[in-house]
Amino acid sequence: MNILEDLWFGNISPWERPFKKDSAYAELLALVIRHQEDLLSRLNDEEKEIFEKYAGCSTEMHDLTEREAFIKGFTLGARIIIEVLANECDQ
Image (cartoon, rainbow, N blue to C red; front, side, top):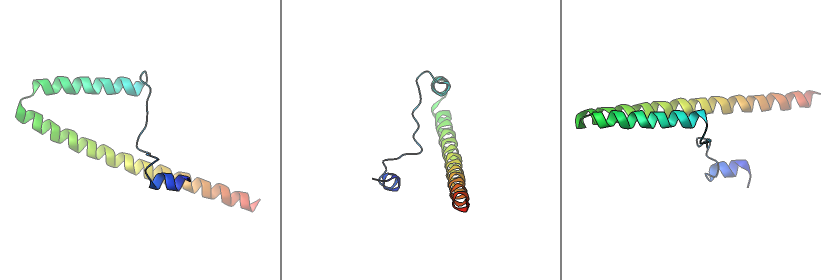
């Protein structure tokens, strides 16, 4: 299978990124989870509902930002390849 077929059939998931358990990302994720659990334990039901709405909107905004960054990066990579190939043909 080629890369376009892999992408079509969902064998490539550009949004999924594994991380090492001892990485800075893993440490930050653990802190986020710990602080979120601590905050939720202190909120009443109405406040929890408001927080959940906030968290959902924040996640949606983050997803949009990541999608735009992916598209810009992919487009830049494609432009670089096109320029490299064009320069190679000129030589």
